[in-house]
Amino acid sequence: MRKKLILDVDTGTDDAVAIMLAGLHPDLDLVAVTVVNGNVPVENCTDNTLRTLDWIGRSDIPVYQGLSHPIVREDFPTPRATKRDPKVHMAVLPLPAATSAKQDLPAPIFLSQAFAEQAGEITLIAVGPLSNLAATIAIDPRFPENCAELIIMGGAVNKSNITPSAEFNIWADPEAAAQVFRAPFRKITLVPLDATHEALVSKDQCDMLRAHGTPASTASADIIEHRIKGYEANQPTGTPQSAPVHDAVCVAALVDPQIIETQHVNVVIETLGEYTIGRTVVDHERRTTRVPNCHVAFHAKREPFVAMLSQTFAPATPSQVKAS
Ligand code: RIB
Ligand code: CA
Image 1: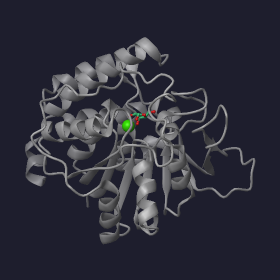
Image 2: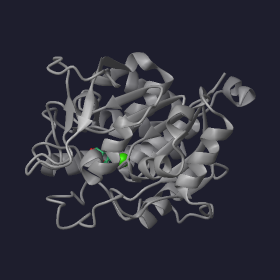
Image 3: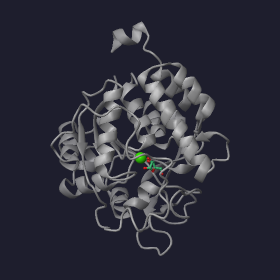
Image 4: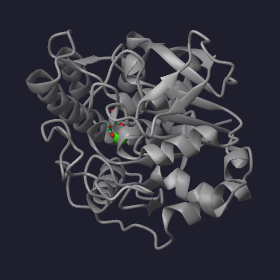
């Protein structure tokens, strides 16, 4: 049976690849996409999401727009944004203008209703700031227990990408993240930068993707190459001509949990520190008596991840067409 999922995104280059993987993988049933402010303003994130779904022929998947700001802070994205890199994300993805439109219902109301109607059956994958999730918890305290699993792209243990202490998605709305990690979700899996930087995609692999000649393969190759240029300019990965595609790793891990290697540990979010706002405090050495609340991916496997992108974005075989 295909796994049902809802993606919460801030599209975003790596979000777009995650959407394409979720929308096209034969083992997944992408029920809906919800959108949050993050990489670019929420209106742009929604437009980019619609463009991506239209481009791969999945305009049937409904898109719900959510919060345009963090749940508490009024200083996002400036002046706190120390260095949001325009070379990695784009206000408008280089895809044809969307012909489909977002739904009228706000994302938190949709999330509350969708998970209540199918309690325990749908996985939520959140790959942007966690504002929509916190807003849903505020209106529906049962929402966390209605999610089969929550997989989050965010945080870091030994890396960072926005301040020396923090990863972007958690830093962008730390109070929302703190509420999510305190909430009674059945299972939270966190895929931090430590894991996503092990699943790099190279320029050569982009060429391999592009050679498939499908809408998803050509778009993902172009988008990942754009990311590679951005990383080369600002955040070298240590592996030449390569970049992480963070958000897509979460989708891959839902299909094949062996792609990530996790430890069950306690995670809390720093919201007060002068230098450390948005830090994921991961108690992987058991320095406290806090109860484990999260499966943190410390590693990810590059080869099966790239192979999954390639297989999913390749032209459909006759048997796949028949099965779908
Ligand atoms: O830190 C990486 C995350 O921040 C990814 O989800 C990327 O899309 C940005 O939102
Ligand atoms: Ca994202």
